[in-house]
Image 1: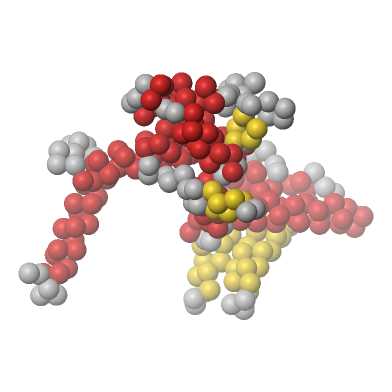
Image 2: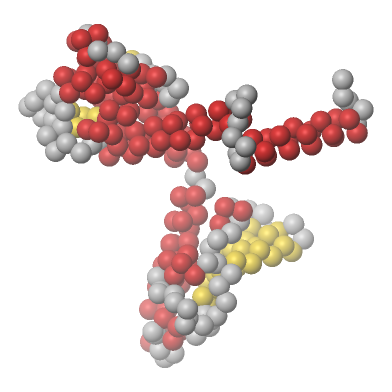
Length: 263
């Protein structure tokens, strides 16, 4: 949790947590301090005279404490009747901080979404075939869906065929009606598209648009070029990825030699 949130002390992140505007004239130091007491680490975020501290309480739970030493930092007076407003500022800061951390530290949400979009599944009594991420046809279907995301009236079977065929390197006539119906059924039951009521047209769901954008860009901009740099016989001379891999392999070989494990 601490590793994934080391930037919380930056002015822009502090401003979000405390819901305050931070400028160059805002007093105080903006930093994230990680303090280790024995084996218990704690995270500290400062805003003016207010501080948030997180630590593992008695090895059982993540405890979040917010301390406001000057209520005027939040436009609140020091009189006792201002205590409820001051408490609400602290509670809201805690909630916003935990929301940020939950989003960055809950990979199960992403794993579930990836499985929903790509894995075989059962919808009621219907078995839905997989949309395998690494298959050319799946990537072509997802690319076509991104285009349809801009159409207010949705798209039909014929529209999908016209856009899918060039992505597969074939003529539209080479794709049969049965193949297109099969693809539309998979996309619909995986939740990527939905039928427009009373028509034979479809539209993207929010889940479908987000999944199509991320999965296609990850495949074309990260995996394919990354693997080409790592495994290609003639990688770019300025490839930091290949350089890092070469250094790692050299370090492993050196360690093996030092341990007398080299062949």
